[in-house]
Length: 216
Image (cartoon, rainbow, N blue to C red):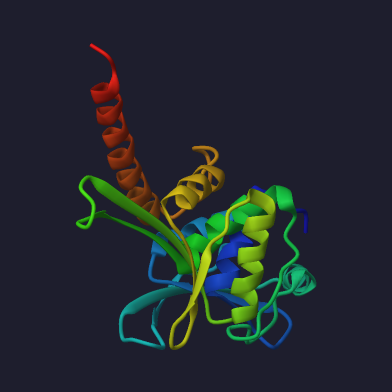
């Protein structure tokens, strides 16, 4: 396998929403977004069927794609992914030049952005970016890599069954710029729409402040 931006994004999806079978061949990706599986299939040139799947933690409808690829399976093992990885996954060997694409896949798989007007301070619009993992080793590695490569320090919080790595407004804006460095990239449109909406509010408000501060 040869690294490129699309493969790195696909690895990000597999890291979060994927599963490696113990047979040394089959890979499964599950998502509630059919669009995400279609993008994944296009990247890897898969012809396999996308089929419905009942979520294991809820009865909400999900979709899945399962396929056999020994070369990709071995490649994933070589970079650090393993079967039954949920709570045991640690560091991965991702080339620095493709880490932004991997991170975007990670966000589309098990991350999110959220924003709101903070009532405690007038005209304060908040923006957060979070990455999630059930493995504390993996979330610590993710935090270390983002800090090492991009100089941004997020905060890890522990929840009942998972860990969150969260970045506040300044870090979020930098990460968004890094992850979405071009228009011609694979991404989940539902999450990109939320990001674009938040950015339009932030940029619009910044424009208002600039016009107010401009001397008459």
